[in-house]
Length: 397
Image (cartoon, rainbow, N blue to C red; front, top):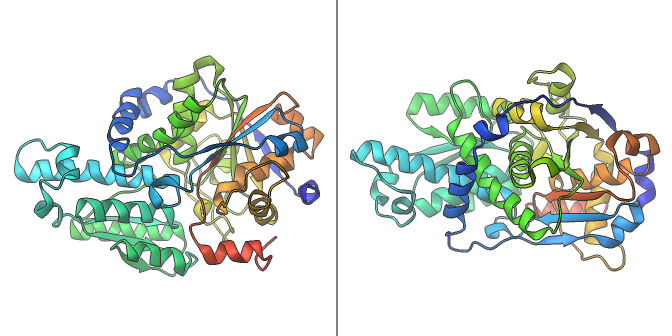
């Protein structure tokens, strides 16, 4: 099965991280600590597994592969359960405080002390699936109405999962970036509140809260490791996950922080293009990638501030190696545990396996038999129909 990766065409840009303080001023330690204190107090909280893929590591000739499996997270199937729900709680506490004329705590909202006020505050967002599901779950928990905007290629299974959590789902004909624009416009017109995982000029606090929520996952990963990884391979998308993990790792490990490799679909490589140009750069998406959660053409400016200073490498991968990677995790080499992962979860692993089939790319990424790799398995099976199609070979790859 590994042989299929030898024919994959990956593109690589070596970045030159800039000296700066974005890690500390964009996502300060105090924000990560506050998110940890709050989220670990939620009903149903439990750390997700850190899984060692020892036999696969031996097969691709690296020292370790540690895979943080986010499938079990709060029963929602994705790390995004940590972000949107936390940001929603923060928005509600702030707005309820304004309406009642005195400070209201996160616990006040969580415990339902202002349930009637929350029913009058509508939260909205655009999503490829997982972020919207987390927001819908949070709104259901905290008693606020929820509107989710999805683009034409979001699967009906993912749409229904959000409806099942009480969200009103609005499907548009355009792509993800068009759904973001419509969510913003209708929120402005109606006095609703956008809870997005991407930032833009004049809009930064909810995306910051989303990214600090993700820090719970990274702290769990760091505490499960006995030494710093040499590399971390991180999914792209708008950059929120990558920036959050990068900042958390830097704050935790300091000078021993692993080399940061950003991985994107070649069909939606806005961070790769940003690295090429040196500024946050949008790309047009002409064709949707199988990695639905990474189909983003416009980077988060806040996330880019961190990645521009800290990321070492940017790699794009073809869709053709995604389904084989999903199957490799589900039907692993003898001795490794079986993992059910979604399409976006495996981007880093797919890039790692393919890179190790190329001596030149391995050298460019500093990979050898002593490398210790951390991977973020960002989602489990969030659409069973798509997963079944991958496992039976009736979808790409």
